[in-house]
Length: 323
Length: 313
Image (cartoon, rainbow over all chains, first blue to last red; front, side, top):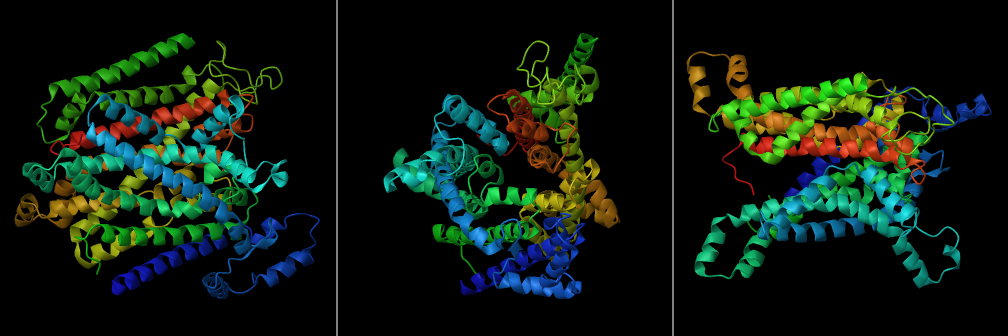
């Protein structure tokens, strides 16, 4: 167990190092430098530029810059964001809780609904219900997330005026609201982005869950249980469902990075002030340190996600031994 | 003139689709080769419909210059003809620069499909070469090659693409295709490697080796033809994915650059005035959904047809 954790952490560190190095190489291969991009105005005197080049160590030889960059990243110092006029770490710290809230709600809904629908589909396998849901999930599965977000906005915010168009809070009223009213306001703003993400996430979960249920349903131990005279309900819950949840755990691990990384498109379209919006804005302002940081955070989360998935898998399935 | 072009397009789609149907009817279902796959695909109504949709799409994209009623980039009157709702003259309306949305969707099909197909061709080639080498030689080489794939797969692809495209800013189309291809082959190599690993142990390979065939020959003559069907499945599903990725990048303004119409940048064109001119974003998005759905369904169908012994609900 300890050995497993150690080996996987080492592998994870290796991957994060590869990503960080890739980011460094890309930044230095790219035309222009960060200072040129962010201080690109005739009003900025050359001396200011030179000051920042010296201050950021951009005049040092590349290997030295690389070592400094890695050392800083390892200390958690992700650099300075010019457009935000703050450290990248502080900018991220503001955005991450918002993303965590939105993605947490969306992932919980996606998995709860996806698993339930998949189980029902498998039970009424090949019925009209199963087929109808299968077509429906395929439609959402094939949809670009940003387009669905736009269409949700169009229908529920512009046409029906049921939900606010953007942001996390009411721009005018929020400071005057009491604590409960603030919570209600937040919930109202949360509905559209969370539902959009759920519509995109649940179909994938349902597809997995349905296939796993059908797979396990053909297993020998299910036939044995049936032969022993175990009731269908009990078979479905005790024997099939428990085993069929295993592949979904892997899916959960794959979904974990999104918890911090957020959804680039959905957040931006609903102006949700999280990591995704931050990333898109960093594109527009050519905020290199912030983009690099987003990349590193995402890769760390990916490593953690797959590790958590493997651990959960072993916890849920006693047949799997971690060595 | 326009009507004639649409008639020709319809006839072409029907003819191609008929050829497919005839190939399916005449072949035996238990043929182990590709004829059997086509025959079994022919029994799958949904998959067949999806393949027909892809044929129609291909014809529309191919003949776009003759089918489009207007120029995709022409701006006839940016005051009077701006943001017109769908009508007989402009079935999908016009956008903020008075361009005809239908014409742009048709031309956009060319760009979006070409980018996806070329990128997947590159990805499949790289992935097959890598996976076949690793799987065939096995041992330490395989171990090392597959660890690299693991590492590559744990890098968030969309963020890397965004970072590269932002840093270089405004890459030409061929470079975009290369980028998408070079970041998209890792999954394919895994599939191929697994397949080759299993094939390597089969008697026909042993027989070929006993007859004195060299490694290259064995890979080319015996291994690769047998990994063809999983690769085609992966490619079909990969196109679906690439169309969405390309649309996303173009939506952000860093993929296919305006004024070249791509479905993604057209959705972006309409995003700013969604409440007043919904059609500008709606129709290109609908095109993406239908196309991606067709490729997903065709991929699922091909998978079932290629592995008939695997029963799935």
